[in-house]
Image (tube, rainbow, N blue to C red; front, side, top):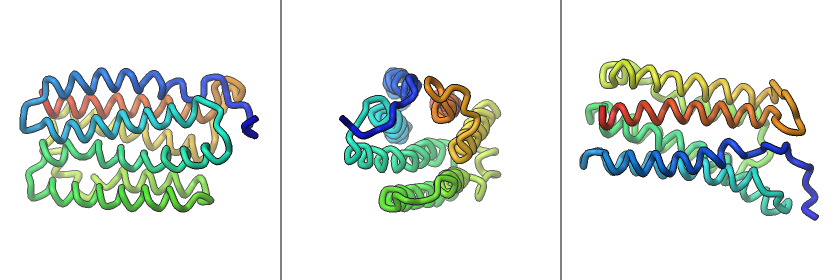
Length: 212
């Protein structure tokens, strides 16, 4: 007996499936990436696969209360790692060093601090957590002009689209709406699907930036 409520039947399924897709797609991107881009792409792929894998591990099984609390902290902290990991190829490949390096430092510092705070502050308001995720993700706004100049129109459009889907997902997470079928596919599943769509757009943006 776990002491947990019964989860929606599709809880974690989208991230479980996306984990394997990301593993294959990430491996392929690493295989075709030029030498100068390989390490930034590796950081990005690891952060993406890690987020999806941890999320699937946390959401699919029925864990004990203690294990659930541990995995929940890891799952929520992993969001910040993905944010920083996603920025890494753009900062080190597309942007010139004078703007890319400061942005990279800022996003990783914010991501690490955010991950630690989220992992420690377990009784935080749900809405506040969503605001923190979005705030760290929007660090690019401080140098959006450099990004528009450095990225191709296709890559920049995908970068923006991914951000829109992430923000939409954060709103769904905070409001717990829409909640179409709580027993099968509830608000959290909607949130997860939006995250997968956002990840897909950002993967395309990275791929276009790396290999054209």
